Length: 202
Image 1 (cartoon, helix red, strand yellow):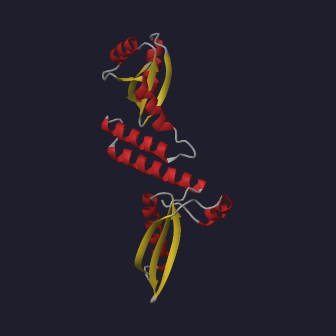
Image 2 (spheres, one colour):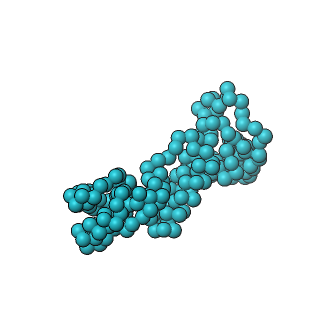
Image 3 (cartoon, helix red, strand yellow):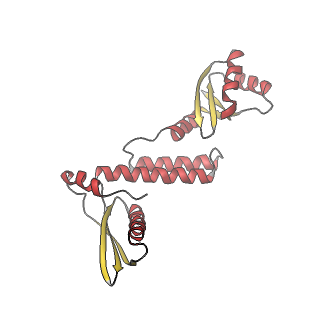
């Protein structure tokens, strides 16, 4: 099965035209501002579409259509790092094919990364201890948190610094930060309490 990639605003009219000319439309897929019209007979569909429209549709393979369906419409709950990596690589491929703008692809990749971090925090898969020390009125205070990866630890530190600056109105002075690997996640019985007081970095 193959598909016609068309602008989203034209999809309804094009589907009606194809069906009116006897072309069987199997499905339509949302594709980041476009639509993919899946058909059994791509040659007939392309001929009809070209005759009916000044600008013909681009023909794409069924595998690419399904990738567009997955990346545009679904984000699995409880995403793990392997799945997040697959999504990020998929958005990069779409940007290279000009199916998705590079800025939009970057935004989607960042969203997937944050989504995966949240799922890992929910599962208690902590790997690093984060400590950030500030000086307030000559006295030092340390804020601690945990992270699910070294990259997440960097985001946690940025979040802590933002929160500290907002809380003290710029009166605190950043002193040091540290990221230390930890051997294992906390016991399951402590996770609910931990989630109540800790937020994943945004």
